[in-house]
Image 1: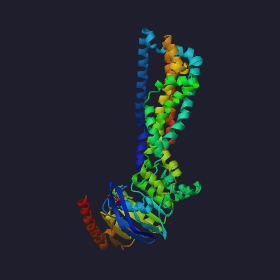
Image 2: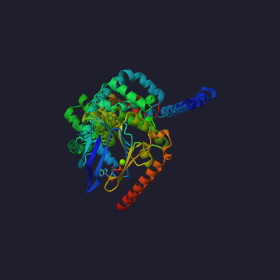
Image 3: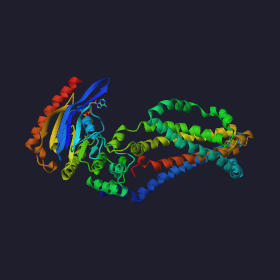
Image 4: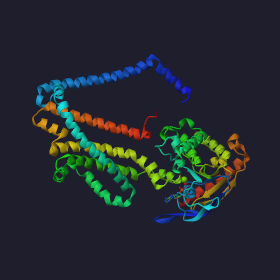
Length: 273
Length: 257
Ligand SMILES: Nc1ncnc2c1ncn2[C@@H]1O[C@H](COP(=O)(O)OP(=O)(O)O)[C@@H](O)[C@H]1O
Ligand SMILES: [Mg+2]
């Protein structure tokens, strides 16, 4: 903090030697990554050309991307994402509300917790046939599958978080004359936020796999249909385009989730900056 | 100012456990009283009842003539483990009590800044508790309590979780603040030295059940950080007397347990 401790650090980083060492490590690490990537692609290309119906190969996938990315995959992705986002948008408020209600009201907890655990444990795939009977195979089906997948982890995690708020902190609030509402807003809610995000992360994963399974088995639309139809005709390169777009898109969603968590819980940052 | 009369407290866990037995204490305005006793004798219980966080089995707590039955604006508490809200910056922690009272934002930030200055943490206003040392956290805990301008300050081993040097430093700071502001302070500790350093009066508690067994008025000039009060004959005498009493109680506690 003082000038005395800051000085040597500034010295070390201002000398060219100090900087170039850090640079060299960074460069070497990236160089290694590029090398690894090139090797993997090279091996895959050679091996894939020899077995074209097993795993395709990078240049073929690139070609397939050019053919189907814009006309086929992007509209399919929009279809999938729309159902995913609507399903998540429904399950977040419902999940958080139920979780809080169960944590705060003993009656609700006793009445609902067994169902929550039972439904959470049931594979949602098993519900698809009955949901098709009830909802058909349209948009509602896919939204429902997503919501069913996402809502329970959100409920269970919000519940666990809100249930185990530090009693000492609640007493602190009370000592400073917080009303029940103020306790909820200033202590229970922020204390539970990291748990809600943990639930969201599990819920998002389950939502993504849920919508894809529904699209592959019942709805026959979106990215799920792309995967199924190209597999059926052994269009392995096209199939891989679908898989990669889905993987990339999931990565983006999880990254968004992490970013919003960091924004909403800045106190939990581990570094001291 | 503060009047605690015939306070009794029992906990029922299977059987009933008597923790406080006819606890009586009165404090005059501006007085600094330390409550000292072996661990488990009921110091925290007594303080929590005064703070309004725990209900007594019988007896009354009166502040300035009116019976106190729960948390109120005229008393503030500082906890052993600081109990800062991790999601609030230093200044927002200090402003917490004022915010709960509905003070407008601009006004409470101004008051909170004032109290952060008082404890020497102006620079750290925007830091989160996780970015601060234990000593800094407790200074925020003290600023948070003082910010609501309480008539009575309650402190439960506030320096118990700090290292010896930080502890000594904060004792000096607290002594200065309490004297300047003429605060009425009830201070729980298990350090005899700390009690003598800070107090006008040291109240010694016995165990099983928890009750007051002796009182010592400390007459050495304040603030005591300004001179070597430990070299005074009064220091040695009081220290020795309190230690003898506490030793008996600790032996007694071990025999019963
Ligand atoms: N909520 C409680 N239920 C049962 N016993 C308690 C409870 N709180 C405190 N006690 C008991 O009361 C006694 C006094 O505790 P405490 O006031 O914390 O002591 P001190 O602060 O002096 O160390 C201890 O024996 C403790 O076990
Ligand atoms: Mg205690």
